[in-house]
Length: 157
Image 1 (cartoon, one colour):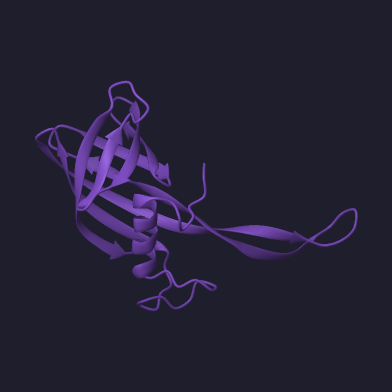
Image 2: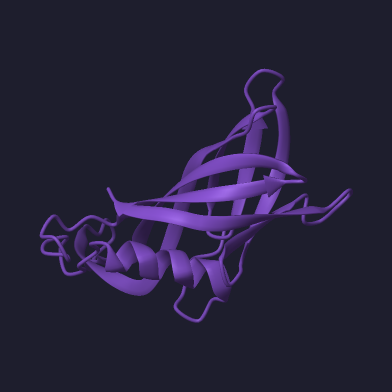
C-alpha cells in the first residue's frame, strides 16, 4: 500500500490532520495537545444506508515511516533510524444499522469490510466531503454504491 504524504488528496490528509490535532506531537511521542502524545483518534459518523440509518465508528492511527541507516562492512549493523516524512494511516472499526453489522480494517483511503455472520466481504474507498466522508463500496466495480457519512464526533485515544 502507499504511504500517506501531505500532498495526498482529501480524506487521508483530513484524517492525519485530525489525528495530529487531537494529540500527535512528533519528536519522540511526547507532548501533544493534552500531554499524552497519542497518534490515534476515534471518529463517529452517521451513515445513510439507502434510507436506513447506521452508525460507523472509525479509529485511525497515523504511523510515521522511517528509513534505516546501516554501518560499514560485510555484516553491517543498524546505526540509526531516520524519518522519511511520510505516514501511513491505519483504520479499523465497525458499522452498525438495524439490519446489518460490519467490521473493517484498512490502510490510507481504503478499507476491507466483513460481515461476521456470513463472512461477506467488500472493499470501500473513503472520499472526503464537506460533512465527513462518502463510503464508496466496490470502488472498482461491479455494483459501485456511495453512502454518505456525516461526522458527528471525534476524540483522542
